[in-house]
Length: 145
Image (cartoon, rainbow, N blue to C red; front, side, top):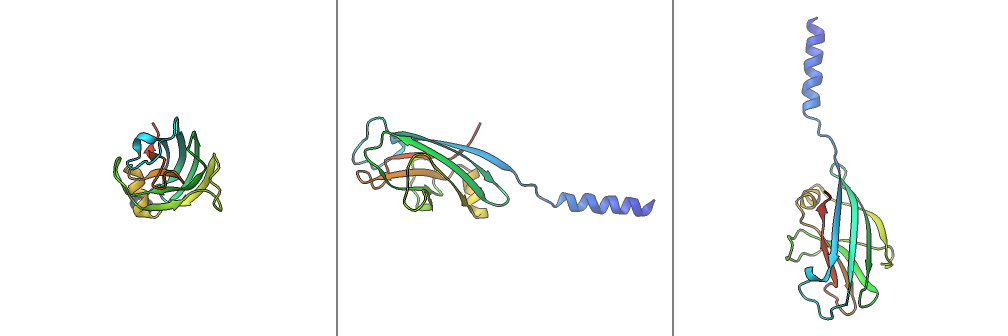
């Protein structure tokens, strides 16, 4: 009997130290109002993004659509860490081999620190064009409701 109790206690203690992965869904609404330094406003430019984040492995999936840009995208990135209205350096380049056609679909890997930043809403997506090299539309990555 004592052996079973000891085994049960040992199993319970080992389970208590195991962290369970969580996959969270995230979204972003991209528009011009979130860009601070637009040079050439594009009428009706907007976009949407959605994806998942595995909080244990850091694997992030994404699908990003957009329309109404002033021209073809010259670049697209996840930036962070930065709160809404603040700027940060690019963290992940989006698109495949320089192709930024809508929809942009792919995967990225985040470090444990970046996972914390994403969960805290400190990453954003920025799509850049020749007319707006600092970014034409932008959207903050937020947990989906």
